[in-house]
Amino acid sequence: MSEAALSRPVVRLSRKLAASPELVFDAWTDPAMVSQWLIPGEMVMAAIEIDLRVGGRFDFVMKGDEPHPHAGVYKVIDRPKKLAFTWSSSATNHQDTLVTVEIKPLGEGSEMTLTHEGFADDAMAALHNGGWNACLEKFVPFVED
Image (cartoon, rainbow, N blue to C red):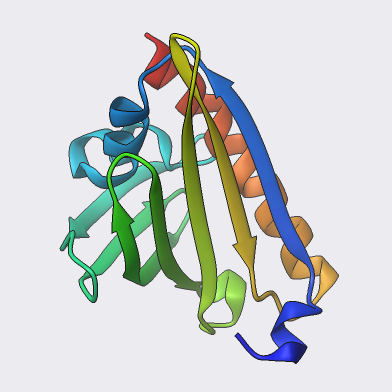
């Protein structure tokens, strides 16, 4: 990323999970699993496609009152430690941002840190902070159940 991009707002969220690093990683990459939690609020996953390889794309549509398409390209796939991908949607003005998920073993479970960077402004970062927190409210019980 450029120096200007590095000075932009960043969303960083961590969760301690009663789930193995492998399960946590798979919950980010298996379409059937992703569709259960990567939907804030009352939205549903209307469509999802994942080509899980470096350079592979993902495309999905969250649907509430209207569809919200999202897309990205996988940059790093290191199961079960790290996943990084670009993230683009109308909420990023269709500009690529970068999401990195790092997973570390922690006792019987794991610790997951999500970093989302490359936002144009604080408002865009705040919107995504709220969205990620809403999704993680579903993620935690999903992987711990």
